[in-house]
Amino acid sequence: QVRLVESGGGLVQAGGSLRLSCSASRSASTMAWYRQAPGKQREFVAGIVGGGITKYADSVKDRFSISRDNAYKSLYLQMNTVIPEDTGVYYCYALDGRAYWGQGTQVTVSS
Image (cartoon, rainbow, N blue to C red; front, side, top):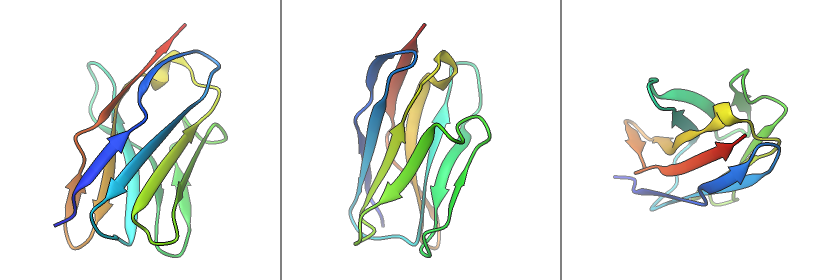
């Protein structure tokens, strides 16, 4: 099992920045951030694989940056120039034979 715990969510004004963190009980080769906005399905935000390759949703590309520590046990999402559409619950995701999810952390962007 992989236990994931997110932190760093909160209130931020449009144009501001926020940094989310996810701590994992053990490493996983693939990790990602998803989010779920009110009235919408959970959607992919950004991901990173063991080789360091990153992928971003078009809606956040050039604004967000995903990274992880050398032990692959901490995941980060640097959110810059946030917009109200970024509002939602952000979930940490890990793939290690099966998918694991954190409990989520709320991000609210005010206009």
